[in-house]
Image (cartoon, rainbow, N blue to C red; front, side, top):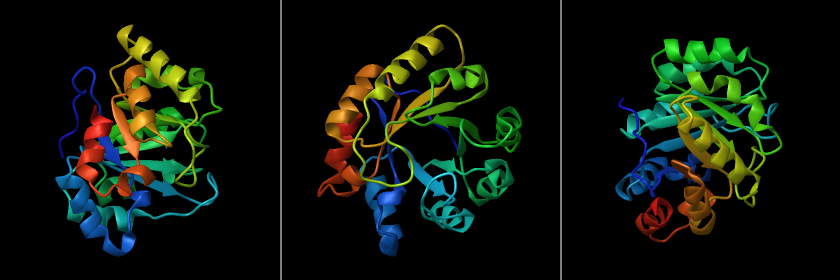
Length: 224
């Protein structure tokens, strides 16, 4: 699968988060987002340990892959993501995003993701200092800034992420890597706007976007 280019200045790529989809009608939900102009899909994988919730595994990712040609960013909220990276890549992930807070050897896991031929992502939770991610910026393709504590959809946006987005833009402009900046958590038309203004390239939206009667209009509002 092809990957994504940085969006034009002032706009953003839109990534519906399938955690908020109706899984009884997954084909319809994915098609609805695709025809509404979504750029990629965001798949949250939770292990009930790293975060207090369970979602889905490689079998569901594989099913999603068969339903769409959109790029899939598989967000591993797992204590030991290195044990499962290969399975998710084989299932059809185009990018695998791990958390800086996980138990894995981060450098080795990023190398594993890259060696499997997909994009390497790193995420950090709201309380985590951006300094924990900075040493890895030259070896990732995506940095995912969480603006809620991961585990459940529908939480309120934490503005602490805006300063992190701005700092990542500054680091990238200074030559400390070539990566997309994604943001996830409480993203709607208003919070999406302030994230775009801070410099986010990708807006991940779940509850708000899937509730829209006209999701194409919602995608347009997020894109800016």
